[in-house]
Length: 293
Image 1 (cartoon, rainbow, N blue to C red):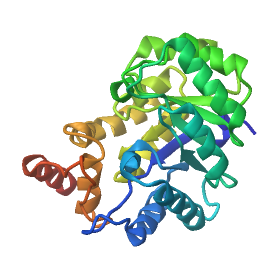
Image 2: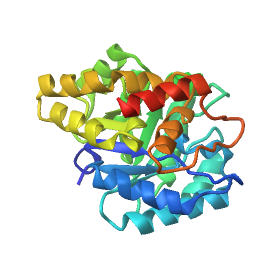
Image 3: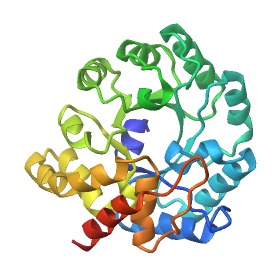
């Protein structure tokens, strides 16, 4: 079964809850896993950047992934996030991380060192050849400093067998259209921009890996399902209701916005590891007002 079938719809990039000592709060993580599944998400992404992975040790990452498999217990697929800017180190992680129960590996393109398009191609080719699971490309130039061009994504899709899809978060609709036009039939294309997913799905995207689905899973997954069913009038109505939330989630930084939402819902405590800090008081009050409205 291709990833286009397995990972169609709404994936949620889970946050990592911390307690007041900035330790991982596994009780809250279990509650969050159950909350998003009960409210309709189609799969879970563990160890995405929304999970503050740059501040997690390798041991913590492995523990979180194992815990997530255990608590999901086969109810929905799990995707493991393994990304970075050292190709050889990532190959070692692909061999050492527990991936037997993962449906795929989501790998953000290298950050800071800004490789050429050929460098990006060779990086992902090396990961795909080493990985026991299909690789999902993750293009997020706002964080990495380098766009994975549509032509490079398509080259990987057509030439490298273990490349299964892409999370496209370049905020670039022409690039999305190019990929959707020329992708192989099996190749999954999902959005990484919550505020753009509805129009992107009208172009043919297969769904989204979402931040908003942590805290607003019911309405958000309904919107995505409406779009998948080509009910774009219904999808627009739900998306219009979510527009303010999108702004609040990303106005300062991610995951400060979504953690403020989740804390107000009583699902986690509002702690982040430095250099990330909680949402400003003024913006937090707007989150409170939105949820009470």
